Length: 172
Image (cartoon, rainbow, N blue to C red; front, top):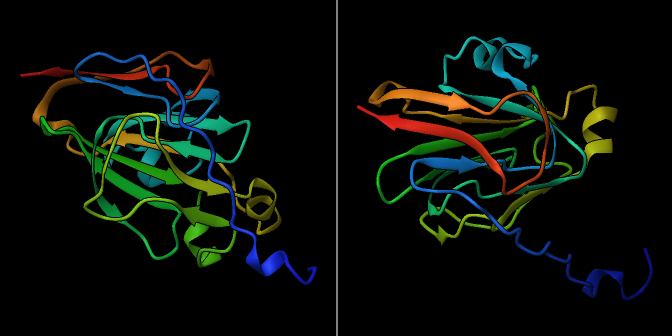
């Protein structure tokens, strides 16, 4: 660490362009999308916290998948919750068992009760630190109030870019 390094501010990634319609959520990260059944965490893979998908990321940035209010953050900065103005609750969880890292390698850029636009950078994470700690770095995105909808349909597995449609919600 150089003499002036302590005065440098960490840069914030630029927002991504998001192309979603009402009742859709964008991919919060770029990488390879997989179904929840392939997420290496039984709570998520079993759909206990809602329906959605996992993304094996290609970089260390997580973006807002919807426009809405930040409703939940963690002191460890590995998970965040948002709620759209029309009631869709989205939970994003970075990694498996990353709570054990106590925030090391994670930087949250938003606060609870802040309103954000889809595509706003929410969290940066150090993939190498996550792997060095012995954890998977998969980004999990679920609709946590899934029972309130007729269906929650994640996109097919395969390559995905942050900002592309990832989940479609059908209202009852």
